[in-house]
Length: 243
Figure (tube, rainbow, N blue to C red):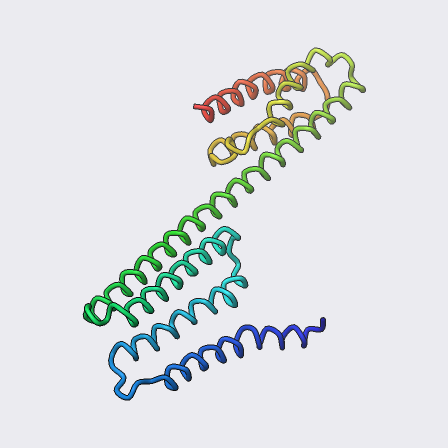
């Protein structure tokens, strides 16, 4: 299907078809218009057009919006229920109840239904937006945790290369391995706290700086002290998140 064909289909489905249906509805009202149309007739015609606009907005406009599937699904349910109840009320009042009830009651029920539909729709949009923000935040925290884990794995491999060249540093293996393991198991919940996130990133960069230094007695002492202190700090952070 070419782009031109797609544009033609969209034009027919989104504009021409809704306009044709609404025009036909108005034409039918005028064809069956009583000799002396009253308020009820004009109200029904305007309200019918309004309901059709809602229906076609859901069919043609909502699917193109950048919103979640849940929002589109819930909006569809609310709209269909609203239109269905409104049509039943319109027919019930026009055929039967208008003999006993004033048109004010008819309009009042329409207004109540419309307000409820708008309120429920607005609440759904608000909840959906909050859910999207929460999901985006969780995904960002996951990416940060994965980044730290990847760096920790690289640092662990770098330390192993140092050990191959300097076997005398084997006694540092337990502390450095424990630190790298602690960094690689950081959870997204830890990264959700800006303060904890900065401290974890600082620990990771600090280890990277030490491993980049030339091997010496000072190197070994600094690496051992830094690893042990960082392990304590990481454990403290993880415990704080669990509380």
